Image 1 (tube, helix red, strand yellow):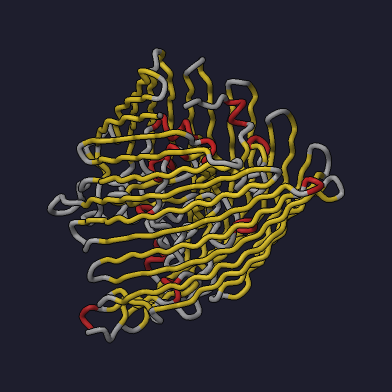
Image 2: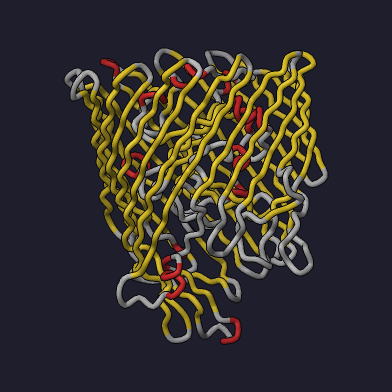
Length: 604
């Protein structure tokens, strides 16, 4: 797979910043692009493994195929301030406003790029895009013709992928795929040393048609899997989705996009509860140039969800079933103040059934002061709307025979609010060097707290906080066939509670468990005769609560292409330690372990 040169990387077109195509080098946001070549060279087998390549994300292993992933703080397996998209389709759960990472899977060989934005995107993407956006963008079926077979096998992991693409009549192309993987039991930081394993299988298709300024994409997936933890009941999950997207280039340079998708999710943990979610989403977007200097983008959408939970003896929701509706309208104007200075102003109105209408404004400025160099600044307001866990949760005291709640959702829980200020610089001073630096400051209001009351606690908005920090990364083409990449994040997170709050845990940290710093160094080296070597060294500082020590780790992949279309690889993960904790409470958490696996890829 061809690597981008640094000049080509700067010219990559991204769409997640403004919903319009723009060059990465001129985008006024803290955006990092993980390319298809990056994913292949590091030997990623899951989406979270690929996301470790983004220096502006914190990725922590919590169990077999389970992770805590966040940007700019508030990391948790139930992190609720990060929006994740697959080809523009939101994959978050309205049960807790987060992502079940073990249920999110794609054929990584079919991914074109992953756009990772650290910072807000509420004006464009909605109420959950508070601290970041991850948009996984897959290739057109026209670009994945022929067959692909992959197999990976090691002591604790085995996986296989089979995909085939074909051209049809009248400018259409299609691909179909199936995949399966099994992860063995990870060691546990428990008295018995036992952890848990997982398995997953998935199949799907994508159909693309293009002609005469029009294009249509239809895709769908089915998946099923299970988490098998030694200390918890087995969790079974399954789901299906169908997406249709139509794009048209209209007169005068205007563009129109219509998208519709439907999804089913099922999840059951034996003796705990069963969750079911059916969602339908409709969206329209129109963009046009006005008066020469303005690019106006506007649109709207409607989402309808039927959410049901079959209560268990301890974890319950009241009511057990809810119909959820989200409606939005947005508009954004990008205009040239001068030939070198651009401004982008936007506003989104989003209505949800819990808090009514939310206002999500943003303003961005970008100064292009030389080839490949941009200085940008942004101010935004965004919110994290309540989820069912905030309003409807009932955590029953097992000793009360169902009569007393340890935790109850708050009927008055409002949206958490974030006001974000950013200043960034991106440049390519030479053909062999590029870098980006971002300073950020976020002020949070109405953060979720658990306020004690007689016999338990109730969810309320008595918290506040602020984060400030620096993100930086660079790429250096040391010589032909050898690239070095580095990235680092420094952050300071302070939280507190309002006068009158009695949430002692919130006073100590308000559910934040983030390192003050983390960094990575990556080397990608083509050694000749079809051999390549890739190394990823990362450092994560200690976590405060639950406490986890800081650690260094190293991933290495050696690959050989004996002939075109054939690749053999050996990959080692976490090579510096037999095992180490990355997240969770001592005595209960699972450990990330050293493991080595072999892989083979055949394209035909």
